[in-house]
Image (cartoon, rainbow, N blue to C red; front, side, top):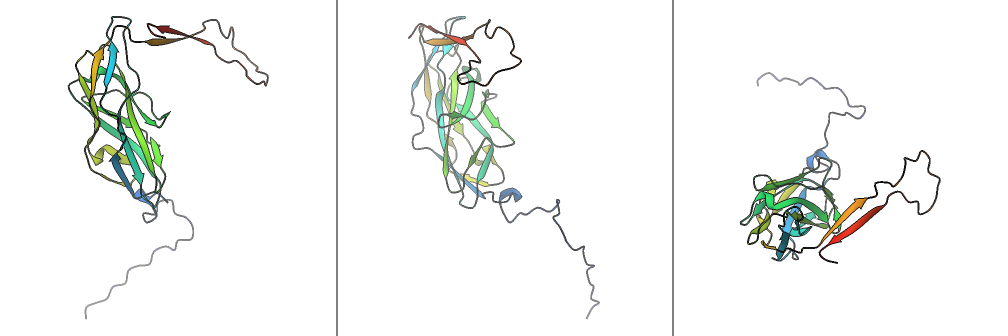
Length: 231
């Protein structure tokens, strides 16, 4: 028999070692993180509809908070899943500039600030997580947008989640039947689209307060609302 060699012994581990990663306890080495995320088009995905803009110069405005796409995210039963990045593609006969901004909603709760479309795509990103799907549950997320006032009549606009790679998690594998396309919305113009303008009181508060006494119903801001064309 040939010569036997003995490996030299390592150093005993007597305490926690920061450079060691527990990859058996969750996705991406994160303890208790879910290992899978299933994505599906929601059964109540918004139907096709007509969206309104008012292209009147200087005073025009567009329909706000139009729902374009609703998607269900279901986490595996072995742990919560954090979704950090989502990317959607604009479809239809339209331009990037036909939308002022897009948002993600969890029910009535807005999750993001406005994101704009560039080269047909809009991306939402948050390293800490756009939202978390609790293990074994489903969270429905809606993509909405504000129409740009100058979008002309006769266009079609839709949004699509193209591929699993457009969903970035904290390590969970993403599965589903892609692409997931929202229905197309058609644009129309109206010259009397209602609008509400919010304005702050220039003279209130009259000066900065250095001390505020504890009190109920303390007034901290005052503003006016003015409607145009419609009640």
